[in-house]
Length: 266
Image: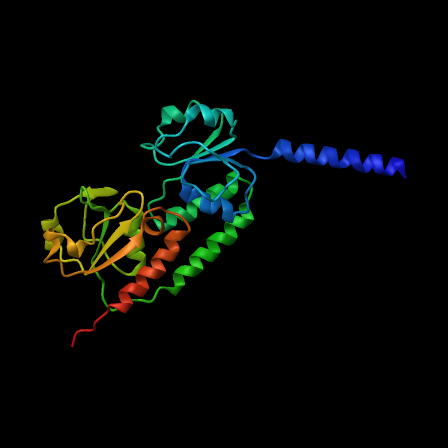
C-alpha cells in the first residue's frame, strides 16, 4: 500500500513538474488580444498585462501599451509577448526580449479572425480558436441587409477633432453593418474640420467616449455643429475602436441602429 502511494506521489510530482515546465509565460500589451486569449481558455499563463487590462486580475501590471515598463516585463521572463502596432512597440524593443513576439494590429474583421487562428496556433489552443472563429462568423449572419447605405462618420477625439479613416477597424465595422465611411483617407485617424464634416452630409455621426475622448461635449451642443443634420449617437470606445471580440457585437448594434432610424422615401 505504501509502495503504491509512493509511486502515485512520484507520478503526480513528475506530472506537475512537466506541466509547469511546458506552461507558457505570456505578457499581453494590447487589451483587445486579452479578450481572445481568455476566450481560448487561457488564464494562469498570462503573467503580465497593461494597467487598463482587467481580463487577468492575477497578472502583473506592466504600464500602458504605449509606455510599457521594459525592465518589469523582462523580470517576468515571458515566452510570448503579444504587442500592438510598430508605433506602439517598435521592432528595436521587440529585439530586446528572448521571447516570441506576436503583433496584434487587426484593421478588419477578417484580420481579427486571422489573429484568433494565429494565437490558437501559438498558444496551443487550435480547436478552441476554430470554434471561436465559427461562432463569430455565425454572429455576422444576424446582420439584416439594408435598403440604403448610410454615410457614417466616427469621431475619435473632439479636441482636436479627429475621425476614423479608411484604415481604422471602425470603418470595417461600418461596412459590415451596411454603411459607408465617407472620409476617404488612408489613415486610422484623420484630423478634419467641422466644415468638411458638414460638407460630407453624414446620415449618422457617432462619437466615442473613453480614454481617447474623455467627457466629450455632445456634438449638437458645439457651436460649429449647429447645421449638422445627422443622427448623433454616443458609443463606448472599447466596443468600437478597439479591435477584438467586441467588434462583432458592434456590427450587430450598428446594423440595428441603421434600421431604427430608417425612413423609407415615398
